[in-house]
Length: 371
Ligand code: PA5
Image (cartoon, rainbow, N blue to C red):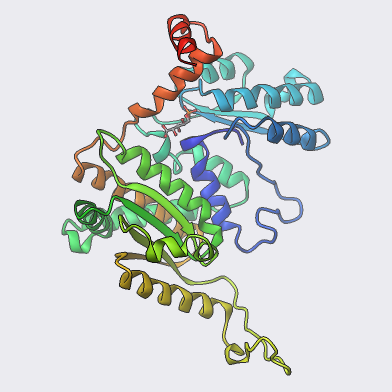
């Protein structure tokens, strides 16, 4: 799958979350498809290694770009398309490429039409970071073997719940949006989203884009940060407990794991763990979470908690919709437009000027003087 930002993070968030049952994460069951990512950065070593790895593999390409002009995916696509065409010939390769892009404009649309690629449309009124429940996320998530019907059912359940409840206290998305803005008004300008399940690390990355790009504008916005506990308690724990207090924490709690692992009794008990024998690792994780929350609250870090019953397509779908709606409400409370992203163009202008892109001649002259 080729894509970046809103054309990448949602898929990765869902696929990594739902791969918890597999070890190593993302390793497919026999005969299933393995989803690998490209175009989400400009690291040539990564692309080089990916091309070498694909050389002897049968592969297809899903290329996703709403604008159809984003540099990172365009470069990756050029290399991967060339490899596929070299292996299969242009005609057969075209049958192995699916484009997801705008209905009528952009370079990817032009290419897809010219080469006869199957393509799906990104709805015009859905911004990249809100697009995981459109073909942008649904196609690659389905290809990776996850149940997108359940994902959508979970989202639909949340949509109904949020639409039915117009009182803030009964509407979890509005409630969350209001609370984070109250904390912001009290000087808590950073929100740390924490989870105790490493499979949610990319979900946190998706959330960071959603809130960062939606709210960070007009000199305003809560800075979205993320941690995965208990891992990061051993790196960021000190700062969160004792550092400069300009942040609050939101914890995603997963009620029930997919598997239960009971800690065994050991006859020698040299590491002194027998007091935990008979308890599950999940229980220890839960106590770590409870203890951390209380310690952080005692350390002047307000804690919000979002509880989901389990990590499943249904509940991940609900959580996605919940955060998307909360983000929109929160943006409006902050009095910014949560659906635009004017700031992301500035670095691109400089990059294109430095790269000498046609049409940027004046900018190229000006920026070269600054180097
Ligand atoms: O949310 C956004 O608008 C961005 O993160 C975009 O998704 C990202 O820049 C990729 O854009 P595109 O899908 O046009 O290639």
